[in-house]
Image 1 (cartoon, rainbow, N blue to C red):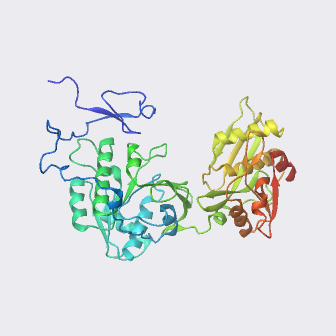
Image 2: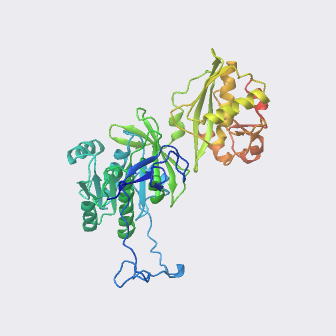
Image 3: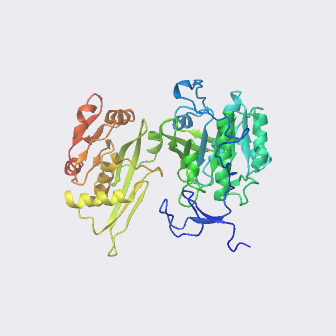
Length: 461
C-alpha cells in the first residue's frame, strides 16, 4: 500500500502544484497560499507510436492559416446600462466570459439581474443560474427592480453535470452564474469553492461559451484582500474582469475593469444604489463634489482622468502636531506611499516642516484614484491644512509632482480644463508646459506653475 496520501498542494494565487506544503510559492512568491486538495484527473495516455488512434479526440484537429479564417463580423449588443457598456468597451461581445467581483452586498447580483431584465426586454434569451438563492428569493429581489419578460429563465442548480445539458438544450444568448464558487463537478473529488473545483468549473463554462457562442457572466466572491477567491488562474482564463469598488454602506458604487480583451481597462462606471436597484450616475464629477465644505482649509478640487472621462474630485487633508515620537500617516483613496513621497518633497523643496506632524489624506466619496495628476491637489491640501489657509472655492488643480519639486505635464489637459469650466470653476492651476494646450478654453483663468513653490505662493502659502 502507498504510504503517502493521494493529494497534492495547490497555490491559491497562481495554481502552482507541489507534492508537499510550501511556505512560499516558487512561481508567484506569495506566502501561505498552499492548500491541500486531490490532484486533477489525468488525461488518458497516448499510444506508443505517439499517433492518435482513429476516432480519438485529436484525430480530426487540423491547423489553418489566418487568411482562411472567416470573421462573421458579429457586433456587440448593449446591456441597456450605459455605464456598464462603457466599462465593457462598448457592449457585450457574444461568446465572451466576464468575471464580476466585489465585496458582499455591494450590488453584483443586483446589477446582473438588471442586465437580465434589459436583455430579456430586448427579446434575447437569458438564463440566470443561482447557486446561492432560491427561486423565491430571486423573485423578491426582482420585484424591486421592475417587470421582467418571459425571455428570462431561472435555474437553481450547482451541479455542472446538470447545468451543461440544460445550456445545450436551451442555448441562451446570455448566462449569469451566481456564483462560480458554488459550482462543482462530480469528476473532481473536492469541496465546492476549492481551487480544483473553481478551476474546473471555469474551464467548463469557457468551453461552453466558445463552443455555443454564449456570453457568460460569472459572479466571484472576494477575499479579505479584495481579490477574487480561488486560484489566480481564474482571472487569466476569462476575457473580462470587473470589480465593484466603494463602501457597501455608501450610496454610490464604482465598477472598474482590470482586464478586458475587447476594450480598454481604464474606464470606470459610476452607479448609485437605490431601492429599485443600481442607477447610473451620468455626471460623476458633480456627484462627487456634493457637500464640499466652503471656506475650510485642507480641501481642494483636483481633476483625474479615467479612460476618456475627466472626473473632478475633492481631496481633503488634515495635518496636526503629533503627541508621539513617530508621526502617523494615513491615506484613504490615495496611495499612502505616494503621500509620504509628496510630504518629503514639501519638506525638502518647499521648506514645510512636516516631520513632527500627523497627516491624514482622504479623497471624498470613497473613490480610489492612483493617477499622478492628483499630486498637485494632495500637495496643496496638505499645506493648506498645515498653515490653516483656505484654498479659493473657484480653484481647481492638476499636475504630477516630481522629486525635485517640479510640476510635470499630464495627458489630456484640455479635456480637464473643459470639464472644470463646465462645472463653473473660474481658475485652473496646471503645469506650465500644458498652458499652451489649454488656452483655447474661454471663461476660465489658466494658471501655469513650474514647481511647488509657485503653486504654494499662488494660494498664499
